[in-house]
Length: 99
Image (cartoon, rainbow, N blue to C red):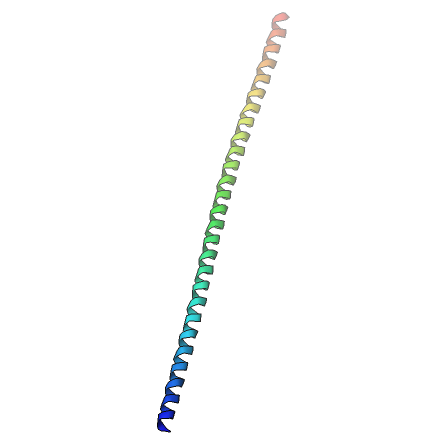
């Protein structure tokens, strides 16, 4: 009787240990999966940040190009107006000379 009880108790202890170990294994697997997912998310976030920064750099370059283009067109406009003034002056001088 006593032997039977002991063996039963020992068996229960063993089954409890097995259950705990299985549970711990499951927890570890779940934690590994979570960490993998987290790593993937972090990588995705970093790539998104890199893309954003690249986009911003491209936008800045475009703005610079546009401003340079605007400056060029402004200088071209100035040159044209100066040339018009000169031609008007020259025309006046010519008419005065002809008189």
